[in-house]
Length: 224
Image: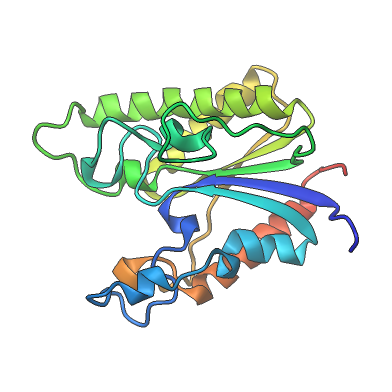
């Protein structure tokens, strides 16, 4: 089997983990069939990798945000709590890179869960403090990825909806500080139907997004 010419890593939450993609209605069935039956190989990351003959790793966790989880749930943890783990339910566990995993591209799509629901009474945020904490955590996360994978890896930061401006701000700051391989991608959601369970992306949506991501990646100055 030929070696893939590109290695991709995707760090994301619910929209990439494919919750509800195979559902036939926006309302999940009582036994959550549409949620349970969704598979990551039908998602935009896998479809993009397949189109580019790339190897890929998908690090996604439903409901987790960069600093705030969906609807403010489980405030003691967030996506970054679990990112370094191999066994997600084991605190302190760390995935050990064997030294052979060096992606040329890392795609980060985190922010939907942070901002998709209004703040609830009792949460420790204002709109302003949540935005500031998100930008700070996002910047730190990109710095971690840069340290881990080196200056040759392209970091592609995805922004859409209420968090797009924050992501663009962080990318501009990093670029101004000399990071020449960080890119901002405003996600084009034109034509998406979001008819998966609980209004998640449908399989059709993932195919459209994969086409858009494939075209973008093909034009990036990535060496392999």
